[in-house]
Image (cartoon, rainbow, N blue to C red):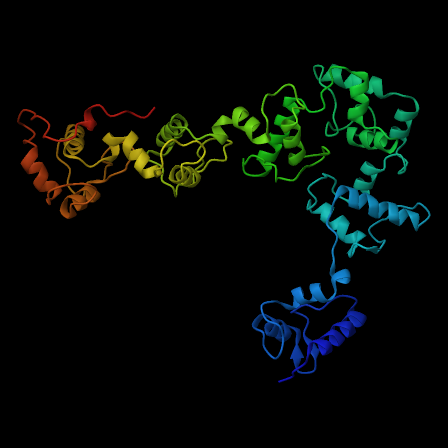
Length: 440
């Protein structure tokens, strides 16, 4: 067994860097004769052979080579700074995918292009390094349309044309292509920013009625976020809003500062509560509507394991509803479970009581001309919460709240007259079955 100390490990790492131009990983074979990198990782994890425990090879490399291992995060300002630094050292030329390393970032322009192509950078919708540079530096990238627009002061005409086509609405960064120009509003906004302005500032100065973020724009941001996140709504921690120049934290600050006169809400959460109540507040009326829609579609009651959607374009699931009921969250009035709540709201369909059982047996006899047995296949009641085999089993075991051990057949013999005789009165007990609510 080959034993080395930390200093010898550093020498092995340095030699690997010189030979391969990168740091080793656990998959890279031998560090030294008879000693693999995976074995070194194992010693770090277990604290074996004099190595510090509770760590890994990768974490140790991060600590031992902090400058070399640091990978700068992707931010809009950071990426622009990388470009400016590259241009300063390359006579104003822009980087491209083959420009190599990004100084000080431990990244390459190729990896940045790949991240854009794979849509891994949230604050932009650009899908390549080239398109991102065109968007961010429209004047320097020789976009004739942007230069012509600024030089001839055509912006008022473009804005007026946009408003005429969109019922008076103003254009924003994310408003797409400028009509009849090889230019987008994002590129125009960035061109103005290169001149010390922005599209929003220009519109504010020229149009007194301009509002940078009206409610319709904010709703469109929320709708797009929900589409991309399985109908979940954003929070202040949801990061940047792609292509807009805003983040959800900035939106929340604007609410808190009272910057938007169109709303009295003092936070993003409060505005979402009032604007999307069905998604933000769980009410018995909403759940009952969803249950009855589910019954109409599936002919059974939902459970917390049900995978079918609660409603079209809703982030609610039956599992999430059950969790909210258990925790009493989302304004749910009483802590319970979905199953218990359904028992309370639909007792005539779900509670095994003498009154309900009498009604179920009578209904079956009317429909089939004979009484049910434990082998009968038809559902006991709407919602298919019970079948006759389960009822017989509950009667035999005195479960589900039933009192008095018996069988389905024996109970029918004792409590229901033969079919040719006159009907008998309902036995003593619950009478929910005769005034139970019917699903819509």
